[in-house]
Length: 279
Length: 280
Image 1 (cartoon, chains in turn brown, red):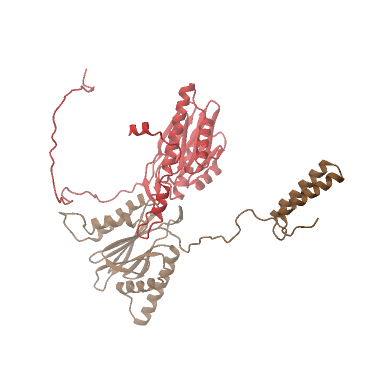
Image 2: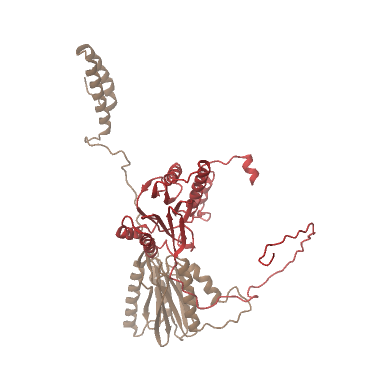
């Protein structure tokens, strides 16, 4: 009996040829059936084995795509308000990922100079790196120009830093709050790739969509008539920021734990910490 | 509406008529891509414990829709029968409707046979239905009850799997809750101990999980009856806003005003006396 070149299927015909031979010679039906079964078993296992005799896997064995994302969303909300002679930058202190909490005490406001504070929310890794880069650039400027950077200058510089990574952006929502050269409050808000503008008030981060409309109404007096448009005082601004964050913590799961407010005046930077919901 | 039922009998099972249209909408042209609305999930912590005289079930009360809290006082412990209650985690609509259906089935059975339903019956009906829908119904359920054979606590997964256990937690906050249960559970606890255990387990879920929060509901089921405590423990975070955000009339500008008179004709007048405390 010659071995067929393609292995597998041709065994069957050989099995039947063998069978007829056996019937005439040994005369035992059982022996014949056994031999046929063994042949068929060998046939099945021949198909199951690969070229090297090992068992083939009965599932997909080609290239598999795994998605790796270089970004993560760590939550957090920041808010900045500019007044006549002061500026406020506030952020919650919760650091989360998915449904878990990494830290209840991770504030998102970073002091840059005596007159400027930046709030960064989004991907915490990029927030840390970005603030390190900004601080390094501030030192370089101070050493070459013998003065601190002004808020407007920091904003312009940040815009170029962010656009430098246009094709692999820093996943950070920045808001700078500080005093300008004339001592008036200034707020600069950014998008992740560096577009910025000067504002009176701005909310960024996970609960920004909940905070911004309330600020538009209470500070910008939008959508209201017959209201006395008093300029915002420092006490009223702080109280408004606290109330607005209490509301945000009620409805946004990523905002909570505590609120840190940095109040920037010509005397310096003062901090206030207020507890928020922890659940 | 009622007439349409007569003309066409309701088709059972899921209706997939819109699936091709939805695929086209979601993969539409660059400006025309429309995202499907996400169903509201409860993102929950639920727990149950068997104690000496019965079963204690507990749940938090927060319902989330992605990252926004949709309901701060949502009821997750559902009535199935006078002696059987269940907690549901997963998609809110699925848990509501599944438990309603289960409850109606068991009520019909009670009326037919004159007996209180047993917990195993509820479990079997639930498992059968969830398996038939092959996991498309996203309901993770903890069923607890006391019947003539004793106190029972079961969990039914969305694909139809069952587990009969003395203590259990489900939902997105189940890992912290299970930690507390594994630490402090013992057999034959008394009522106050069991209530404290379940309450602390849910509290752990509320503090560690962003999808759970607000208050804790408890339900104690015994042979004598049911004690549905809602809320058992209220959230301690009730920070009040300092300012009043009220608007005087006239704040919203009135742009146009048009008054349409409705021509009404007095056809019939009846007077019905109300029963008040003063009347004899």
